[in-house]
Image (tube, rainbow, N blue to C red; front, side):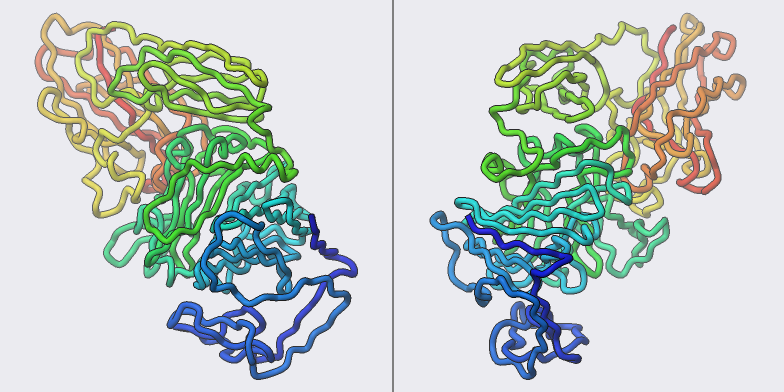
Amino acid sequence: MFVLPLLISGALCTLAVGVAGQAAEYQQCGGTGWTGPTTCTLGWTCTPVSPPYYYQCLPGSGSQATTTTTRQTTTTPNPPISSTPPVTGGSPPTLSTVGSGFRVDTKGGLIFDVNKSSGSITNLQYNGVQYQDSSKLSAINSGLGDSTVTAETIGAYVKITAVARNLPVTQYYIAKSGDPTIYMGTYITGEVDPGELRWLARMRKAVLPKGWHDPVSDIVGCTAFEGKDTFKCPNGQTRCKMYSSDRFIDDIVHGVTGSNVGVWMIMPGVAYETSSGGPFMRDINTQGGDQQELYWYMNSGHVRTEPWRFGLMGPYAMKFTTSTSPPSGDVDTSFFSELSVRGYVPNNQRGRVSGSATGVPSNFETVLHWYNNAAQYWTKASGGTYTSPLMKPGTYTMKMYRNEFLVAQSSVTVSVGTTVSKSIAATVDPTRDTIFRIGEFDGQPFELKNGDKITRMHPTDPRMSSWGGTYTVGQSSPRDFPMALGSDAGGVATVNFSLSSSQVKQLTLRIGTTLSFQNGRPTVRVNNAWSGADPGAPTLIDSRGLTRGAYRGYGNVYTWNIPASALRSGSNSLTIGAVGSKNLGGWLAGNYIVDAVELYVS
């Protein structure tokens, strides 16, 4: 093992200061739209890396000397960027120091640099092409700030550790020989200002033009119209980085792509175990602006429903490929057990849960979810049985969902080295004499009007169908009923239905919601003669939801008993609206998302 240390405040460092008007070592010196220096300091040549877009100062014969102040030098030779073919297996990646950074050559086509004072990534070269943006670095959040950074070779791996001085964060970068992947782990001991924790790679959009679910988060040429993160384009279409999100249970791989290249975030195995939000949480994946931004969000306040967890986030990985198709998310990170990564729990220190999961009809997903203050896990049942991921020991709340609608809850204790048998069954819905039901009580609005679009665009987007409207029982489909209603936008929904004389009796109206904003909740009125009582404001989630593509929060089911005196034989009408705060107006006033609506005999 050899270690390359850095004393941030003391005696070990090498500072290189470029001559004014010239680009320093490994900095950009040309390319399409470049207005900065076009010559390099002595010993460095402005070299085409990805012509005509990007030229960089690489070792060669530059045009002017460099003034260097050296306190003490403890560097290995600074090799040029390798153009040799990828190596598989054999010796570990090459670790060296270059200027103010540690350089890792993975021998798999990927070379990356980590700044010695901040732990940010400053260089991402894959197969000779520079992907790192020159104006903004890749880092946790917007950078860890002053950090103690060390690099070492341990057996077949290179490990770089960045310990933030003023944040409760330790970041790990790990490389394997022949593998164009940066493996990472993020260890935290407390909440991180400004209330979120994310990995953010800021890369050159010229060579990585396409984001995830492109173009939903591409904001080039568009103008912010709601906050600083929701944009309207000249054609009226809307964009937001939130629209690039997927449910955590499904989000194992996401990435950005260019010509015969892809850069991918991979969250394998139990990477989400210390994050917050559960299996249906969704968060930002990409945004394309001046840079192409690739994210993995570990914690945030974006429609957050539970507190932070602390410990190791991950392991996770950022992988480079020569394909625009996502790679497998089945990535082995068990080698972390050899590398003294804080918070890493190896498989032999974990246990499992398995058993039967019954009572959910086959046309729905059966989702199992375990959580406590320290960890969270999930899986999907198949054929009425399930096996959990390997879990940390402890006692967990256990939930089962019909798609995303809670149908059973229990608890289970997991021990090291054992598989606990635990069966769970859905609470059976009582048999009801149903007059009508619109949609399914499954925790999702997708079958309703605009439900197929809401995760990828703003409710004002011209591609949306008109909001509100009329649903006629026996004639309409769920697509005729709006998936959201607002107190200052979207109008109301009217349901026309018929009753026989024998059905004119007390009926129960049941409305399920999946998310509310600004105290939004339903109002109901029957035949313009009877109004249901206000159910009161739901639990507040202080985060925009509907307008940023979110549909899931705590969820509520509201019921009202409609007296027989409000009903009549023959035609009847039900009007459903919304009440809530109107401080902000439009779709930022009180609103809610509909799961399903049902009327049945009490």
